[in-house]
Length: 331
Ligand SMILES: [Zn+2]
Ligand SMILES: [Zn+2]
Image 1: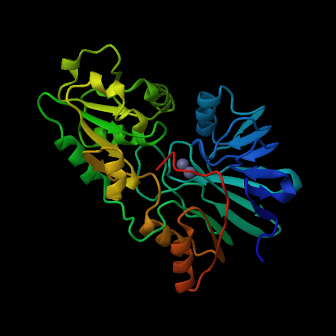
Image 2 (image 1 turned 135 degrees about the horizontal axis):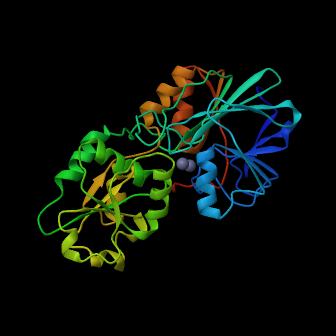
């Protein structure tokens, strides 16, 4: 078997010779963190290696990211105990997101963390890294998931604006909200974008870290009339709660890869499902495995069976890892 030194445990991937973990679900003495989403980055670790952006996101969420936080730049290699080398490469998922290349005993293993291949104005693009083992996520690992080009979804959002009402878009606080705003700007929309209070701090951090979101303002305290014709962003949990009553006749939208599934849109009472995802879709997953062309593919974090079957059909060695603790904060 390849890469025996990397052990899939229920709590995450254990890098045995280094006494380290990648994205551990439990507090660990030494943790390598791919990105800031809650299912990957947790508080309470001893020492953390992550990009400076991910450390800033963790600091915002947990007060301080770890007892000892070591920033690692893209392309930079750090040497861990046991002589294991770790290099961080862009994953194109959210600001600061990284794939982690681990090198030990003459073998190269890449842990993608969450990733996508579509351009995203809020973070640098995914870089294919040659390796013996590719550990890929599979959140949207079913052929039914094919994300449409984002330009069309943004155009549908802009077209939903109307006199006397606003469009309320549910978007996750880390990554999705900022990407929707940046894509609106790219489409030439420069009106203020209005925010639920729960999105404010992360948007401000993105701006501080150099991602220009233009004019963003808080909804709190603003009269209803001022929001007519406006675009308002909230966390998905606020779409149907009392908070939205302060808005003028909102058209309810949601930006998520799961909006491909009609039932999910209905569950959330969404009028305007926007299929906008920060994860690779089926075509991106299979194209990435083909492009990187690793000796083995380990599949985790989502719909593993279909991708495993695709690997078999295309004569690629593959296995599914049963890691727990991952959910879809970040779809
Ligand atoms: Zn994830
Ligand atoms: Zn994520």
